[in-house]
Length: 189
Image (cartoon, rainbow, N blue to C red):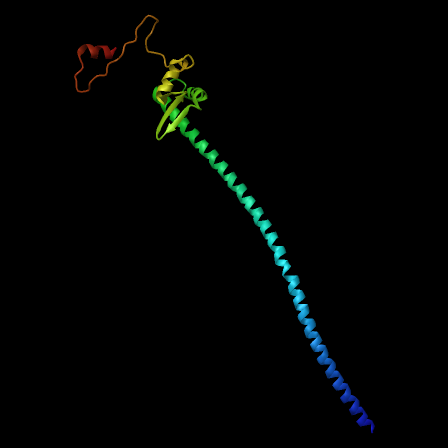
């Protein structure tokens, strides 16, 4: 055999050996590749389950935060409701005091509210004072307060001069009736 034939025979056997090894490596690699793919899938599958508890933990945290915000809002609304009721009560007492023409209305309002703040209630548009089992209107309670020792300081003085004088009441004059001469003379003085 010549050197070229030997070389060709060696090349042919090497090529066949190469191709056999390639096919064996390819089939072995395919099994290895599929097993590696399975292993990767197994490793990737637990990761979402690990992420889910983290998400639920975050959801729990946000749920707790939302519950806290909800309770804070409820307390704020309750405080605003109390402030609104207090403002309405103060306005109603101020209105009644203005109608009574009492002296020092702001001081009277502060003292009256100090004594009656827990007893003043509202039903619809009406304000009343509940003292135990007795219930009276706000106007009646104020008049009762003004007749008490504490409230006498706010009652305006009468127009009568002297201790033995009696207060005279002016009768309203009918606008359609002509005044009498004595009344006109009395009014001029």
